[in-house]
Length: 405
Image (tube, rainbow, N blue to C red):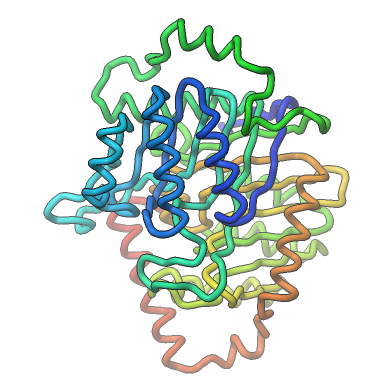
């Protein structure tokens, strides 16, 4: 049975583009925290602006804020000793999700990663999206970037904050091997302090605009194995005018590909903004074989070129009767759809959808290059071989995990 999305009409959701917009808002909220900070991220890099986020966590812990930080064992790896010591001394509780053993990623069960990027402050304010703690102009593998990484997050208040907080707390206590996964760590004194605080402490936006319909979608390997993908397919199936998707690692499964093809064939304008720069062999080449059927159906593919595209967002019928948008951590590829813990915020609000659409349209028109079907069909034999090898390796990897996609 398909799981319904629990939309609630009590949210304020603000779109944030890149670390240049996310980090100041995140740091301001951390500096205003009264009781607790829950933070999860795939990559926590301490270079440049990433260090500013680390300093904000340390400041909060030093003044008595309960500060829990979870980083992924692959994305972050070993935290530099200097920073680990400083966090420990300040009182930041740091845990590494699924650290790699001697065999590393040779074991398929190690491919299940913590890829979501969530931060909840005082149980009232949520940050969610695709942006790691990583300077916009720095890449751990490629060094200094000449243009900022293209990615998005949201800042939100409302009912979905509690959903995110509970999910993060369950993971934390599971990692601590505590039997009661829903144990609450805040004392009554802290709860009273929170209740007595100002109606809108720093970092929490006042409700000056009408509330929005929104929901938080989580993907795990227990209850919510396909919730995010099903939400995409449902929204694509209901599209009447336009679908715009920006996705960093794009290798959708058969059902999602068919949904996009059918939408294009019934007259919906479908535009994809995808990675144009070479980053990783598998992600770059394995995606190319699926382009042919999409291009043949009339889907527009634009490749982002100024820097690395890490966005995981979509907007459907922004100017229609039922606008739909999502911002999150989930790529449309097997790793996200089948293996990783992911989190996406879904918003049904015209103003939010139009804002996201405008930013994506600007990127497509001014920072991307539309893929010409003839140029795609005429790519060299070497490119075709690399594409097929990568695609075959991806299918082999899925077979090893026991998954079908």
